[in-house]
Image (cartoon, rainbow, N blue to C red; front, side):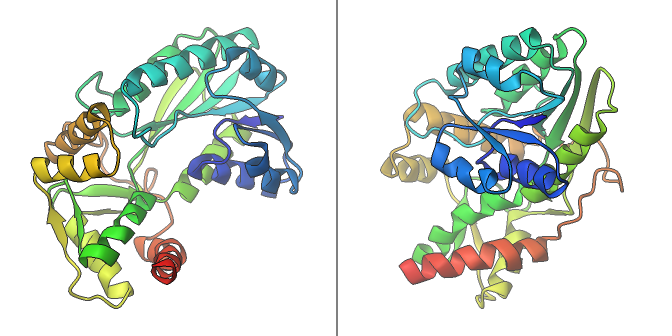
Length: 302
């Protein structure tokens, strides 16, 4: 039995579908039983649990050959202490894994997780790595993924409203662009092989490095807006916009801390790009198969 936490999320669903397509028995964990049903129809065992419920997680992990572990990658926009929320989930995961004597874990980490602080919520993944490494007898593979291509989907509303993409990142800083489906496949493959020993780290650089300006230019060309550009917003403008969207001051500070870490390369990949850390899904494939369908759907809604 293979167990997937966060099964309804982007990477968790990719892991689950990969293992189901391989005919493997899986247990999918999520908060909402209805959102687990697509996996159930394909043969998965559903398990409803809050991510911070150690007692439920202990039951979910019982009998697992390998577990896919993750923290919520997106912000809770109204949170006043997101790091405490991350720590609470870690404090539920670790004893549940240790007491059920799970032998193999693949964890979703991030570039920048080598740093203890100054990285926004990525610091929570640093803590997750450290705590997993302390479980005696556990083989754990940490997947330090680059910048999710899917993060660019948040630019659709900017394009529709402002006819431009915008954000707090410098326009020319290079991002290792990785597709979440590639992360899911690599995680699934690792869970099946379970041949990693003790603690290992694998960086996932994605298929290419692109700046925000380059990425937006390619998106604009694909959606019939060849002059589409990226605008770096000032910190004050970014704060005001996030406030208007209901973000707490705490989360705004974390978002801007992450942006600063990326702009200054405090968050960066530690390895050179190679065949081992380059993943297959191209940026063009992401645009055509993921971005354009969502862009067209939101255009119709508007």
